[in-house]
Image (cartoon, rainbow, N blue to C red; front, side, top):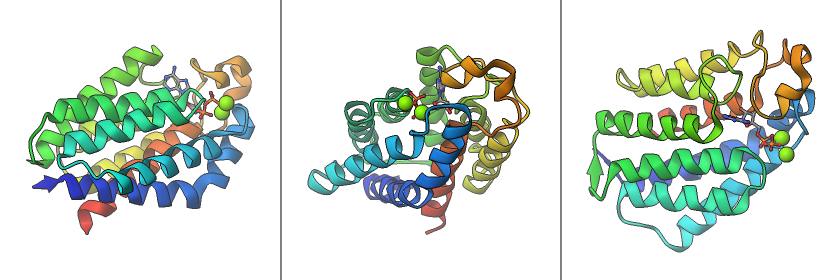
Length: 199
Ligand code: ADP
Ligand code: MG
Ligand code: MG
């Protein structure tokens, strides 16, 4: 069973991973965007870790909704509202249970990913974070490790795609041949989830 502490540890691990990988995320965004993805997420997840430190909610749902609200209020770029919506909607779907099963998390994550698709109007293959999140949510039904592998593969598979949403879409054909920054950060977030589950 996964409790509030598990989700708090996941968010703390995510903040550390984003800190470590910020340079690489910004480099990817420099190629097909505006070179701020790493710093956007660094600002957002630093604020998430800080608010959870201050006020540790006692249910998984409340941890994720608080984290999501914090991302929305601190990240100006497209990724703030999108990741904020992902966490808020996933948290809302978990309800007020004190503990949830991995299967319940997989189902809740589906709702979160669907909300991202609705907000951003993107679908699979549009070269966005959804290309990592959709396969990860699907594979989470099997295991955390499978979700991690699926997200990583999804991010790598964005390289040959033509960007259809967000800033990268302004480049048209020139977006081809670059890995999507948001799919890359999504793979990072799913990797930290798997690491948290592995203990
Ligand atoms: P901005 O583009 O505003 O500078 P970021 O650089 O932080 O924001 O985030 C860019 C990432 O956001 C992209 O790599 C992509 O994965 C994701 N993204 C952008 N627009 C959308 C959208 N409409 N739907 C889903 N993801 C999107
Ligand atoms: Mg950017
Ligand atoms: Mg920007």
